[in-house]
Image (tube, rainbow, N blue to C red; front, side, top):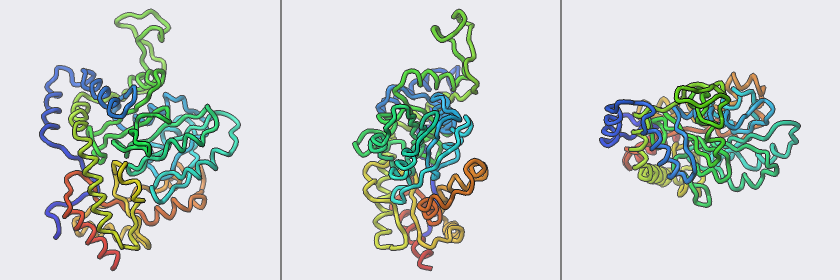
Length: 387
C-alpha cells in the first residue's frame, strides 16, 4: 500500500525535546560562543572516546580545518577514495595537494586496502603521505589493518566519518576515537544519523592540532601567550593564519546536545531498518546489498543497493511515481570536471568504482520509517526490476 507521505531517501528526526533545546538557546543573551558549543564538544568527545572535539559550521568546514591544521601542501601525496562527496578531495586540493585515488571494495563501498597498499608502495620523493579514508554509508574502514600497512612514521591520516556517527571499528572502539589517525571529521547535515541543521566536528587526541583547529575556526586569531609575538592584553590579538569564521551557533550546539542523547537509539533503528531490507531482498539475485558482516558495527547512513543492468534514471523515475525517493552515492570524483582537470581521464584505472557507480542506488533510510515502509519500498523495487 502506497504510504500517505513521500518517503525521501533521508531526513532528520526532530522531537519536542529538540525544539525546546533550540528555543532555550535562542532565548540566551548571546546566541553564539556562549557555552553550548563547548558543552557539545565535551560530550561529543566523551562519546567518541577522544581528548578533543572542535565543532564547526559544517562538515566541509571540519574537513578544511583538519587539512589546514595538518599543514597539507602541494608537496604531499594526498590519497583518498573516488566514492565520496567533493568536500573530501577539496579539503586537500584547496591547499595545493593533487588527489591520488584508490579503487573501492564493492562489498562495502570503501577504499580497497589492497589497492591502497599498492599506492603506498610507490616511492615518494618529497612531502608526506596524506590519507583520507572515508567510512562510506556508515561502514568503518578497518583502520587498524590500514595502520599496519603504513611503514613510514611521516604519514598523516584524516578520517572522513561524515557518514559514520556512532559506527564502530572491527575491534569495537568508536569511530572518532582517533586510535589510528591524527583527526576524524563528522558532518551533522540533516541527512546524517544525527543533526545540528548544518554543522560538523573534528576529533583529535593531539594538543597542537587542537590549537590549530581553534585558530582555523576563528579567522586565524590568537590571543594567548606563549603563542603571540606581542604582549598579552585583554584587547590584544594577532592573526597567525589565513582562514575564516567557521563557528557553530548556540542553537546548532543545543540541537546537537539534544540529539546526542538519542544517538544510540537512532543507530539501533537504522540497523533494524537495514535488517528488514536485507530480509526482503534475500533471494533477489540482481539486487545486492553490502556485506552482512558489517551490520552489527555500522551506523548506516545510507541504504545502498546495487542492481544489475540498472537504468538508474528509469528506476528513480518509477520509484518517485510510487512515492519513493532515491539517490546515487556517488558519481566518482574523477568524473567531476574540476577533478578531471587535475588527474585526467582515469576511469579505466578504477574498475570496481566504475562497476559500483553503474549499479548503485540509495533507498529510503531514516528514523521515522517503519517495517511496512521497508516492505513497500522493497515490493515496488522488485516489481520494477522484474519489469
